[in-house]
Length: 277
Image (cartoon, rainbow, N blue to C red; front, side):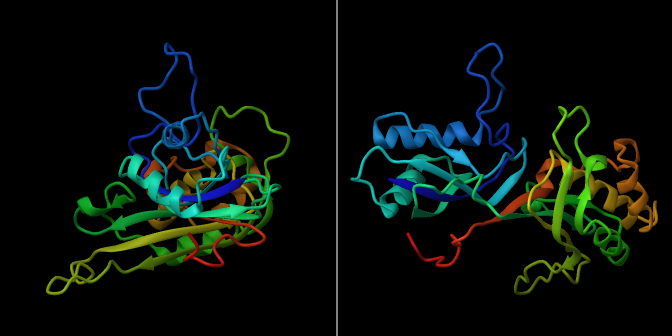
């Protein structure tokens, strides 16, 4: 029987989603999310189980909605047993949000129709420790209106080669379809007796929804938007950067910790019943 898991994790203690080389001399210093999950599943079922993710997240990148599928070698385990059992075996920075029984032809990566990533900038007079692992602190107040104007120029089916990570292997195509794009300022949660928003804190969120993304594409876009938000560049430059197909014109690659894979869409929708075990 095939199951799909929805995962949330903090990426700081992992080398990324993908399992790395099995050669001890080439193994990274940090484990991957994939091998950590496979280890827990295999321990639970007393046999090796392989998992397939909806896509790779780089080292340090977080997730609230990574989707994973695997085939259970036993009918004794229900969705509820998998969720509870895995959360008892996994480290606390990886949680199984829900488990769904899926059709045999479901594939976490190939069945996905679109994905949502958000990049978060923490604004304010200090780097609040509560957000240090999920945002990039920028003290200077950002021009959110200019950032939003610039990101709208990226919507649609376009060649995003400019924003691909330097040194990436040749690809068949660097054209991707960006369906939604926005930059908004969000208030922090209010704490009774101490409103952080009144102290000058906020989150600036860069939200992108697309059918696919290149390696470090969102982080390249976020770094470029930061320069626009700091008034180092004009919003209108985004069109020229995109047309150039040159990484040299893109801003700095934003740190991985500010990026979160938030949702992956499927048909039928795995999120249709959030209370399903």
